[in-house]
Length: 184
Image (cartoon, rainbow, N blue to C red):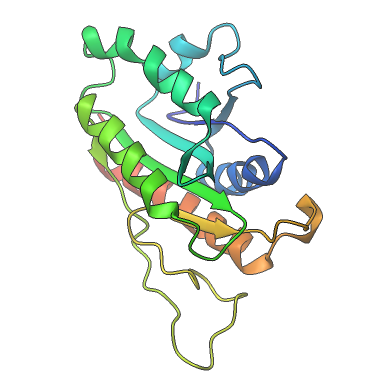
């Protein structure tokens, strides 16, 4: 079983592609929250066995999708018994605009992790914010708290910004390194 589990909801496939990019370099297992906000059979056990749980959801109207929130509310059972205490945690989000209040979603993930007694891992990446930098540079959007990506509202999954996918892969490497150094 993977030490890292990415639990995520994806409404249109963009967040799924980000999750896959993070998993490709971290060795994480993917655990999708379905359209009704439920985990597949065995999902809670998979999370209990993980050393790191990575939360992912699109930012809709300034927060995580309702499907993710339903999952988070259901995590009160593991919270009650402290199943996730001292695990590592991280998060990522995607939305159509460059800002789109993505930090609200990352803060939601952070608060969820802290209520569970987890240790948060940020991106560990400096932003690329000089005039010479482009959207195809690593961490062009400047996420420190976690991974943030932006996909234009009329873009297909195949049209996602290559720099965001490269940033997701770099984030995955960061998570794998953190898990190797810090996980119990």
